[in-house]
Structure formats: C-alpha cells, structure tokens
Length: 320
Image (cartoon, rainbow, N blue to C red; front, top):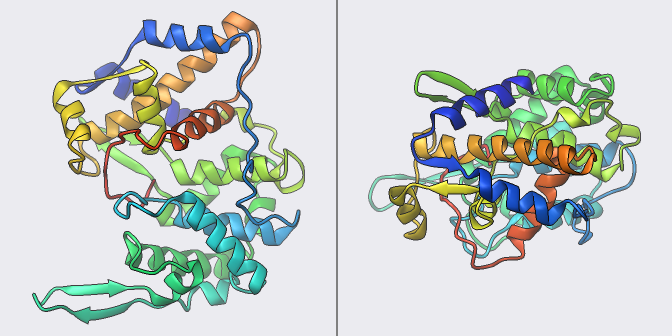
C-alpha cells in the first residue's frame, strides 16, 4: 500500500489538470472534527451475508464485477450487489469455481460486420433486461476468478483470505499476483502509478461485512487507502477539496468520455487518494483520533450516491 500512497503523492505533486486545495481540505476537516461521520458498511441490507465462507465467495465475485456502471443510466452498484445476493440465495452453488468458468459470451456478427458481444447467463443471473456495460469483460473476469480459485485455492475465496495471515496488505498482494483483472495500475509521465481499487475494496468489504472479526480480521486495515472510483473524486470536487482545470471541468460537465490511462484520468484517481490521506492526517492532528481511509471513503461514497445530480467523470475501465 506504500506504493499506492507514494505514487499517488507523486502524481499529486506533478499534476497538470487536478489540484488539491489546502484551504478546502482544512474547511472539510473543520466540519468533521467534532463528529466524524460513521457509515455502516451494509446500511441498506443489499449484500449477502451468512458469516461464513460463502460470504467470502460472494464478496470476491462481487468485487470482480464491481466496475463501470455509468454507460447504463439505470444501472448501479446496488443492482449488482442485490442481483448476486438473490442468485446465491436461490442457489448456494451459483459461485462455485467450476460454475464461474462456464458463463458464456455469445458473439454474433452485426449489420456493420462488427462483433456484438452478449452475456445472457450473467444478465439472467442479475435479472438485468439488456446488455451490461463491458459485458464480455465481466464474463472473462468470472472465468479468471473461477479458474485461479480452482487452481490455487481449492476453489474457495475463503482459502485465499486464510492464506493472508490476517494482513490486508498481503491479501491485496495475493489478489493482484494471482488475478490479473485486479492489477489496477497506470503509466503517468513516465512513472508507474499503483491504484488497486478493487483489490483493496475486497479487503475492506471483508472487514466491513465481518465487522473486523473472522474472515474480516486484519491487523493492518489502516494500511488500506481509499478506493479511487468515479464517485469519490466528484464528491471531493464538490466539497472544494479538488480543483479541476477548465478543460477537464468542461469535459466532465459535457459528459465526454475521458480515456483510461490518460493524464486526466490518472490524476482524478491519484489525487483523490492523496487528498483522503491528507484528510486523515489532519483529522488525527486536530482531534487526536485515528480515522481509517476506509471509513472516510465509505462516508464520501455514501454522500455521492445520495446526490443524483452529481457529475462524475466517465471512463470505460474494468478497474472501477
């Protein structure tokens, strides 16, 4: 996680399109210092939970698919979490490693001679009436998760978690080593930048779901950073913590797509990580309380999803 912090700090120092406003940061911290907001991990009851290995399997499948909802204006994270929960309630073997490898993608030739992808089984599983954004990638990642769990962890995500020795940092390292679809990093001005959103959020989901016990017990949960996505940067900008160049602000306002791996996209994500780390440091100095980046992220994200008018950047990516 030090790589995530250090490379994000490097981006923030060399950023061309996104800056962190220290006065805006101070103001937000001032409003929070008397009562640091606490948000329950599963405050709407949208997740599957049985306090055992099946919950771990559910969370790993969920976080393998937890990316890129915005191309479908009606689709959001809740649909994914609830859809997978219902599938598992109906069939406890739905996410067995061998089953995950059998989801199929149908490829048909369209009128313009372009290949059209569809994942009818995944859509049926989620009870979604039309193609999912990046559907073929979602099916590919299910295959990857099923194959590697079967090959290296007896088919069980719980075995993956058990092998980390109660270390969230080791868990993130194991996930990114074994599952290429979780290797969330970019090149920025000649430097490699590590972000690891979905690998980190898997550790955080375990910690939140199991309330820091059992499969969610990590002796270094404070090492996890925030999870650089679409929503949190937009909330930080709305709070006056992040400032955008006029070009970037106009692109976001116009809902223009921002390419994955571009300077703008990497800066939005890396500067968000750096800003939340600074918020955490300031809260510690001003109130003497140790606040986790995970807790700050959960609060910022919950603020964002409750604000339908929030304008976020649009990037097609499997990483968030």
